[in-house]
Length: 376
Image 1 (cartoon, rainbow, N blue to C red):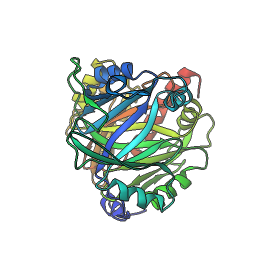
Image 2 (image 1 turned 60 degrees about the vertical axis):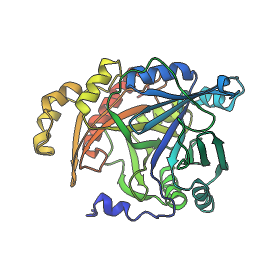
Image 3 (image 1 turned 180 degrees about the vertical axis):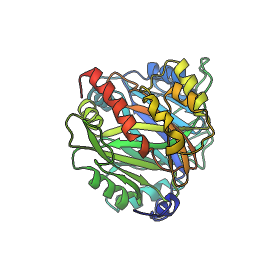
Image 4 (image 1 turned 120 degrees about the vertical axis):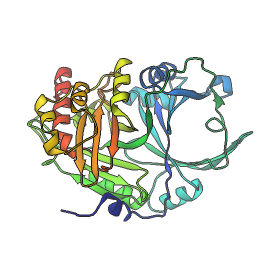
Protein backbone atom coordinates (compact mmCIF):
# COMPACT_ATOMS: atom_id res chain seq x y z
CA UNK A 1 0.00 0.00 0.00
CA UNK A 2 1.29 3.47 -0.92
CA UNK A 3 2.55 5.61 1.95
CA UNK A 4 2.59 8.82 -0.09
CA UNK A 5 0.43 11.70 1.04
CA UNK A 6 -2.11 13.13 -1.38
CA UNK A 7 0.11 16.21 -1.80
CA UNK A 8 3.02 13.98 -2.83
CA UNK A 9 0.85 12.09 -5.30
CA UNK A 10 -0.56 15.30 -6.79
CA UNK A 11 2.96 16.69 -7.19
CA UNK A 12 3.65 13.92 -9.71
CA UNK A 13 1.20 15.46 -12.18
CA UNK A 14 2.68 17.11 -15.24
CA UNK A 15 2.71 20.90 -15.20
CA UNK A 16 2.09 21.76 -18.86
CA UNK A 17 -1.55 22.73 -18.12
CA UNK A 18 -1.77 25.02 -15.07
CA UNK A 19 -5.37 25.17 -13.81
CA UNK A 20 -6.58 27.68 -11.22
CA UNK A 21 -9.84 25.87 -10.49
CA UNK A 22 -13.35 25.49 -11.89
CA UNK A 23 -14.48 28.55 -13.84
CA UNK A 24 -18.09 27.45 -14.35
CA UNK A 25 -20.27 24.40 -14.93
CA UNK A 26 -22.80 24.69 -17.74
CA UNK A 27 -25.95 22.58 -17.85
CA UNK A 28 -28.09 22.03 -20.93
CA UNK A 29 -31.63 21.92 -19.58
CA UNK A 30 -35.20 21.80 -20.83
CA UNK A 31 -36.26 25.06 -19.19
CA UNK A 32 -33.44 27.30 -17.97
CA UNK A 33 -35.75 29.90 -16.43
CA UNK A 34 -37.36 27.31 -14.17
CA UNK A 35 -34.05 25.54 -13.44
CA UNK A 36 -32.54 28.86 -12.36
CA UNK A 37 -35.46 29.45 -10.02
CA UNK A 38 -34.93 26.00 -8.49
CA UNK A 39 -31.21 26.48 -7.88
CA UNK A 40 -31.81 29.92 -6.40
CA UNK A 41 -34.65 28.76 -4.15
CA UNK A 42 -33.34 25.35 -3.10
CA UNK A 43 -29.56 25.90 -3.02
CA UNK A 44 -29.24 29.64 -2.43
CA UNK A 45 -27.50 30.69 -5.63
CA UNK A 46 -27.58 34.32 -6.70
CA UNK A 47 -28.38 35.25 -10.30
CA UNK A 48 -25.57 37.41 -11.70
CA UNK A 49 -25.86 37.44 -15.51
CA UNK A 50 -28.12 36.53 -18.42
CA UNK A 51 -27.87 36.00 -22.17
CA UNK A 52 -30.80 35.45 -24.52
CA UNK A 53 -32.97 37.07 -27.19
CA UNK A 54 -33.12 40.30 -25.19
CA UNK A 55 -29.31 40.55 -25.37
CA UNK A 56 -29.01 39.61 -29.05
CA UNK A 57 -28.49 35.86 -28.59
CA UNK A 58 -31.02 34.20 -30.87
CA UNK A 59 -30.60 30.46 -30.29
CA UNK A 60 -30.52 30.07 -26.50
CA UNK A 61 -31.23 31.52 -23.09
CA UNK A 62 -28.60 31.25 -20.35
CA UNK A 63 -28.79 32.20 -16.68
CA UNK A 64 -25.56 32.52 -14.68
CA UNK A 65 -25.81 31.78 -10.96
CA UNK A 66 -23.12 32.15 -8.32
CA UNK A 67 -22.50 31.18 -4.70
CA UNK A 68 -19.04 31.56 -3.21
CA UNK A 69 -16.65 30.63 -6.02
CA UNK A 70 -19.19 28.32 -7.69
CA UNK A 71 -20.68 29.49 -11.00
CA UNK A 72 -23.48 27.56 -12.70
CA UNK A 73 -24.70 28.37 -16.21
CA UNK A 74 -28.16 27.02 -17.05
CA UNK A 75 -28.84 27.01 -20.79
CA UNK A 76 -31.89 26.10 -22.89
CA UNK A 77 -32.22 26.03 -26.66
CA UNK A 78 -35.05 28.02 -28.21
CA UNK A 79 -35.91 25.81 -31.20
CA UNK A 80 -36.54 22.08 -31.32
CA UNK A 81 -33.70 21.49 -33.80
CA UNK A 82 -31.16 23.21 -31.54
CA UNK A 83 -28.18 21.00 -30.51
CA UNK A 84 -28.93 22.16 -26.96
CA UNK A 85 -32.48 20.82 -27.20
CA UNK A 86 -31.20 17.59 -28.76
CA UNK A 87 -28.82 17.17 -25.81
CA UNK A 88 -31.63 17.74 -23.30
CA UNK A 89 -33.94 15.39 -25.19
CA UNK A 90 -31.39 12.56 -25.09
CA UNK A 91 -29.84 13.06 -21.66
CA UNK A 92 -32.37 15.08 -19.72
CA UNK A 93 -30.98 18.06 -17.82
CA UNK A 94 -27.26 17.44 -17.55
CA UNK A 95 -23.78 18.89 -17.47
CA UNK A 96 -22.42 19.81 -20.89
CA UNK A 97 -19.38 21.92 -19.97
CA UNK A 98 -16.84 21.64 -17.15
CA UNK A 99 -15.01 24.93 -17.66
CA UNK A 100 -11.52 25.31 -16.23
CA UNK A 101 -9.96 28.63 -15.25
CA UNK A 102 -6.52 28.94 -16.86
CA UNK A 103 -3.93 31.65 -17.34
CA UNK A 104 -3.55 30.99 -21.09
CA UNK A 105 -6.50 29.43 -22.94
CA UNK A 106 -4.71 29.37 -26.30
CA UNK A 107 -1.75 27.47 -24.87
CA UNK A 108 -4.06 25.10 -22.96
CA UNK A 109 -5.74 24.21 -26.25
CA UNK A 110 -2.41 23.73 -28.03
CA UNK A 111 -0.96 21.61 -25.23
CA UNK A 112 -3.98 19.31 -24.98
CA UNK A 113 -4.79 18.89 -28.66
CA UNK A 114 -1.21 18.02 -29.57
CA UNK A 115 -1.43 15.28 -26.95
CA UNK A 116 -4.58 13.81 -28.46
CA UNK A 117 -7.41 16.03 -27.25
CA UNK A 118 -10.30 16.28 -29.72
CA UNK A 119 -11.12 19.95 -30.47
CA UNK A 120 -14.56 21.28 -29.57
CA UNK A 121 -13.87 25.03 -29.96
CA UNK A 122 -10.82 26.55 -31.57
CA UNK A 123 -9.17 29.31 -29.49
CA UNK A 124 -11.38 32.38 -29.60
CA UNK A 125 -11.24 35.89 -28.11
CA UNK A 126 -14.51 37.65 -27.32
CA UNK A 127 -14.69 41.27 -26.22
CA UNK A 128 -17.02 43.95 -24.90
CA UNK A 129 -16.70 47.18 -22.94
CA UNK A 130 -15.46 45.23 -19.89
CA UNK A 131 -12.46 43.67 -21.63
CA UNK A 132 -11.79 40.31 -23.23
CA UNK A 133 -12.21 36.62 -22.48
CA UNK A 134 -10.17 34.01 -24.28
CA UNK A 135 -11.60 30.52 -24.54
CA UNK A 136 -11.12 27.15 -26.21
CA UNK A 137 -12.51 23.67 -25.68
CA UNK A 138 -11.92 19.94 -26.06
CA UNK A 139 -14.12 16.85 -25.65
CA UNK A 140 -13.74 14.53 -22.68
CA UNK A 141 -15.93 11.48 -21.82
CA UNK A 142 -19.32 11.19 -23.52
CA UNK A 143 -20.53 14.52 -24.88
CA UNK A 144 -18.95 16.43 -21.99
CA UNK A 145 -16.64 19.35 -22.77
CA UNK A 146 -13.69 20.92 -20.99
CA UNK A 147 -13.59 24.63 -21.82
CA UNK A 148 -10.42 26.59 -21.03
CA UNK A 149 -11.31 30.09 -19.85
CA UNK A 150 -8.81 32.95 -19.56
CA UNK A 151 -10.38 36.03 -17.98
CA UNK A 152 -7.49 38.00 -16.48
CA UNK A 153 -8.33 40.94 -18.75
CA UNK A 154 -12.06 40.96 -18.04
CA UNK A 155 -14.09 42.64 -15.27
CA UNK A 156 -17.67 42.27 -16.46
CA UNK A 157 -20.44 40.25 -14.78
CA UNK A 158 -19.54 36.97 -16.54
CA UNK A 159 -18.27 37.22 -20.11
CA UNK A 160 -19.05 39.11 -23.34
CA UNK A 161 -22.53 38.36 -24.63
CA UNK A 162 -24.02 38.39 -21.12
CA UNK A 163 -25.58 41.30 -19.27
CA UNK A 164 -25.72 41.82 -15.52
CA UNK A 165 -28.88 40.29 -14.10
CA UNK A 166 -31.26 42.60 -12.28
CA UNK A 167 -33.45 39.87 -10.76
CA UNK A 168 -35.25 41.06 -7.63
CA UNK A 169 -35.54 37.46 -6.36
CA UNK A 170 -32.20 36.65 -4.73
CA UNK A 171 -32.58 34.21 -1.80
CA UNK A 172 -29.84 34.09 0.81
CA UNK A 173 -26.98 31.63 0.29
CA UNK A 174 -26.55 28.26 2.01
CA UNK A 175 -22.82 28.45 2.70
CA UNK A 176 -21.61 26.69 -0.44
CA UNK A 177 -18.03 27.77 -1.22
CA UNK A 178 -16.39 26.06 -4.20
CA UNK A 179 -16.41 22.93 -6.35
CA UNK A 180 -14.48 20.20 -4.54
CA UNK A 181 -14.67 17.59 -7.32
CA UNK A 182 -16.87 16.40 -10.20
CA UNK A 183 -17.51 12.69 -10.76
CA UNK A 184 -17.94 11.18 -14.22
CA UNK A 185 -19.63 7.87 -15.03
CA UNK A 186 -18.24 5.97 -18.04
CA UNK A 187 -19.30 2.72 -19.70
CA UNK A 188 -18.13 -0.84 -19.23
CA UNK A 189 -14.34 -1.22 -19.54
CA UNK A 190 -13.94 2.51 -20.21
CA UNK A 191 -12.45 3.71 -16.92
CA UNK A 192 -8.81 2.89 -17.65
CA UNK A 193 -9.07 4.43 -21.10
CA UNK A 194 -10.54 7.62 -19.63
CA UNK A 195 -7.92 7.71 -16.87
CA UNK A 196 -5.20 7.34 -19.51
CA UNK A 197 -6.77 10.23 -21.45
CA UNK A 198 -6.58 12.49 -18.38
CA UNK A 199 -2.96 11.50 -17.86
CA UNK A 200 -1.87 11.91 -21.48
CA UNK A 201 -4.00 14.85 -22.63
CA UNK A 202 -4.47 16.87 -19.43
CA UNK A 203 -1.34 15.91 -17.48
CA UNK A 204 -3.40 14.73 -14.50
CA UNK A 205 -2.29 12.03 -12.07
CA UNK A 206 -4.25 9.14 -10.55
CA UNK A 207 -4.23 9.85 -6.79
CA UNK A 208 -6.68 7.20 -5.59
CA UNK A 209 -8.13 3.94 -6.91
CA UNK A 210 -10.97 1.72 -5.73
CA UNK A 211 -11.94 -1.63 -7.20
CA UNK A 212 -15.12 -3.66 -6.97
CA UNK A 213 -13.84 -5.42 -3.86
CA UNK A 214 -13.72 -2.08 -2.01
CA UNK A 215 -16.90 -0.50 -3.43
CA UNK A 216 -19.62 -3.09 -3.21
CA UNK A 217 -22.71 -4.26 -1.40
CA UNK A 218 -24.61 -7.53 -1.45
CA UNK A 219 -26.13 -6.50 -4.79
CA UNK A 220 -23.85 -4.24 -6.79
CA UNK A 221 -20.37 -2.84 -7.27
CA UNK A 222 -18.35 -0.24 -9.13
CA UNK A 223 -14.76 0.76 -9.77
CA UNK A 224 -13.39 4.29 -9.43
CA UNK A 225 -10.17 6.22 -9.99
CA UNK A 226 -9.58 9.81 -8.89
CA UNK A 227 -7.70 12.08 -11.29
CA UNK A 228 -6.13 15.36 -10.14
CA UNK A 229 -4.20 18.19 -11.71
CA UNK A 230 -0.86 19.37 -10.32
CA UNK A 231 -2.16 21.76 -7.66
CA UNK A 232 -5.19 19.69 -6.64
CA UNK A 233 -7.65 22.42 -7.69
CA UNK A 234 -9.29 20.14 -10.31
CA UNK A 235 -10.26 16.60 -9.33
CA UNK A 236 -12.29 14.28 -11.51
CA UNK A 237 -13.10 10.83 -10.10
CA UNK A 238 -14.07 8.42 -12.88
CA UNK A 239 -16.56 5.59 -12.17
CA UNK A 240 -17.16 2.41 -14.16
CA UNK A 241 -19.78 -0.27 -13.43
CA UNK A 242 -18.68 -3.68 -12.18
CA UNK A 243 -20.40 -7.05 -12.19
CA UNK A 244 -22.84 -7.62 -9.35
CA UNK A 245 -26.01 -9.54 -8.56
CA UNK A 246 -28.12 -6.55 -9.56
CA UNK A 247 -27.80 -3.24 -11.39
CA UNK A 248 -25.40 -0.71 -9.84
CA UNK A 249 -25.98 3.03 -9.50
CA UNK A 250 -23.56 3.59 -12.41
CA UNK A 251 -25.53 1.26 -14.69
CA UNK A 252 -28.75 3.02 -13.73
CA UNK A 253 -27.15 6.36 -14.54
CA UNK A 254 -25.84 5.16 -17.92
CA UNK A 255 -29.28 3.75 -18.82
CA UNK A 256 -31.21 6.91 -17.98
CA UNK A 257 -28.61 9.47 -19.09
CA UNK A 258 -28.26 7.40 -22.27
CA UNK A 259 -24.51 7.66 -22.23
CA UNK A 260 -21.50 8.78 -20.24
CA UNK A 261 -21.60 12.01 -18.28
CA UNK A 262 -21.24 13.87 -14.99
CA UNK A 263 -22.81 11.87 -12.17
CA UNK A 264 -22.40 14.27 -9.27
CA UNK A 265 -20.88 17.56 -8.27
CA UNK A 266 -19.31 17.89 -4.82
CA UNK A 267 -19.47 21.37 -3.31
CA UNK A 268 -17.62 22.43 -0.18
CA UNK A 269 -18.88 24.16 2.94
CA UNK A 270 -17.27 25.26 6.21
CA UNK A 271 -20.35 24.33 8.28
CA UNK A 272 -22.08 21.26 6.90
CA UNK A 273 -24.59 21.09 9.74
CA UNK A 274 -25.78 24.62 9.05
CA UNK A 275 -25.70 24.13 5.27
CA UNK A 276 -27.63 20.84 5.28
CA UNK A 277 -30.16 22.13 7.80
CA UNK A 278 -30.81 25.11 5.52
CA UNK A 279 -30.98 22.99 2.35
CA UNK A 280 -33.45 20.60 3.96
CA UNK A 281 -35.62 23.53 5.05
CA UNK A 282 -35.77 24.59 1.38
CA UNK A 283 -36.90 21.17 0.18
CA UNK A 284 -33.62 19.58 -0.95
CA UNK A 285 -33.93 15.82 -0.49
CA UNK A 286 -31.01 13.73 0.78
CA UNK A 287 -30.35 10.00 0.84
CA UNK A 288 -31.59 8.24 3.94
CA UNK A 289 -29.32 8.07 6.98
CA UNK A 290 -27.36 4.91 7.82
CA UNK A 291 -28.41 2.89 10.90
CA UNK A 292 -27.63 4.02 14.44
CA UNK A 293 -24.74 1.54 14.70
CA UNK A 294 -22.87 3.56 12.05
CA UNK A 295 -22.79 6.59 14.37
CA UNK A 296 -21.97 4.51 17.44
CA UNK A 297 -18.78 3.39 15.70
CA UNK A 298 -17.54 6.88 14.73
CA UNK A 299 -15.33 7.45 17.82
CA UNK A 300 -13.50 4.16 17.24
CA UNK A 301 -13.44 4.34 13.43
CA UNK A 302 -12.64 8.04 12.98
CA UNK A 303 -11.50 9.34 16.36
CA UNK A 304 -12.38 12.64 17.96
CA UNK A 305 -14.27 15.16 15.84
CA UNK A 306 -15.45 18.70 16.54
CA UNK A 307 -19.08 18.10 15.60
CA UNK A 308 -21.94 16.73 17.71
CA UNK A 309 -22.40 13.14 16.49
CA UNK A 310 -26.07 13.21 17.50
CA UNK A 311 -26.65 16.19 15.23
CA UNK A 312 -24.82 14.47 12.36
CA UNK A 313 -27.04 11.44 12.89
CA UNK A 314 -30.21 13.54 12.84
CA UNK A 315 -29.20 14.97 9.47
CA UNK A 316 -27.76 11.75 8.02
CA UNK A 317 -24.28 13.22 7.52
CA UNK A 318 -21.50 10.67 6.98
CA UNK A 319 -18.02 10.82 8.54
CA UNK A 320 -14.73 9.36 7.30
CA UNK A 321 -11.01 9.90 7.83
CA UNK A 322 -7.58 9.37 6.31
CA UNK A 323 -4.02 9.91 7.48
CA UNK A 324 -4.42 13.69 7.16
CA UNK A 325 -7.69 14.30 8.99
CA UNK A 326 -11.42 13.67 8.66
CA UNK A 327 -14.28 14.75 6.43
CA UNK A 328 -18.05 15.09 6.61
CA UNK A 329 -20.24 14.42 3.59
CA UNK A 330 -23.82 13.87 2.51
CA UNK A 331 -25.47 13.18 -0.86
CA UNK A 332 -28.70 14.50 -2.29
CA UNK A 333 -31.18 12.39 -4.14
CA UNK A 334 -31.17 13.01 -7.92
CA UNK A 335 -32.29 16.57 -8.52
CA UNK A 336 -34.29 15.69 -11.63
CA UNK A 337 -36.86 13.06 -12.54
CA UNK A 338 -34.29 10.94 -14.34
CA UNK A 339 -32.10 9.23 -11.71
CA UNK A 340 -28.93 10.87 -12.99
CA UNK A 341 -27.32 14.02 -11.56
CA UNK A 342 -27.03 14.57 -7.81
CA UNK A 343 -24.93 16.66 -5.41
CA UNK A 344 -22.53 16.00 -2.59
CA UNK A 345 -22.02 18.46 0.25
CA UNK A 346 -18.57 18.06 1.81
CA UNK A 347 -16.65 19.64 4.69
CA UNK A 348 -12.98 18.74 5.01
CA UNK A 349 -10.95 18.83 8.19
CA UNK A 350 -7.56 17.97 6.71
CA UNK A 351 -8.71 14.79 4.95
CA UNK A 352 -8.00 14.77 1.22
CA UNK A 353 -9.69 11.44 0.47
CA UNK A 354 -13.21 10.78 -0.82
CA UNK A 355 -15.03 8.90 1.92
CA UNK A 356 -14.00 5.30 1.19
CA UNK A 357 -15.16 4.29 4.66
CA UNK A 358 -18.66 5.50 3.76
CA UNK A 359 -19.02 3.64 0.48
CA UNK A 360 -21.00 0.74 1.92
CA UNK A 361 -23.42 3.01 3.77
CA UNK A 362 -23.74 5.25 0.71
CA UNK A 363 -24.32 2.38 -1.68
CA UNK A 364 -26.96 0.80 0.51
CA UNK A 365 -28.79 4.15 0.66
CA UNK A 366 -28.55 4.48 -3.13
CA UNK A 367 -29.84 0.95 -3.60
CA UNK A 368 -32.84 1.67 -1.41
CA UNK A 369 -33.73 4.52 -3.76
CA UNK A 370 -33.07 2.37 -6.84
CA UNK A 371 -35.37 -0.32 -5.47
CA UNK A 372 -38.17 2.26 -5.05
CA UNK A 373 -37.73 3.18 -8.74
CA UNK A 374 -37.71 -0.49 -9.80
CA UNK A 375 -34.18 -0.14 -11.19
CA UNK A 376 -32.12 -2.32 -8.85
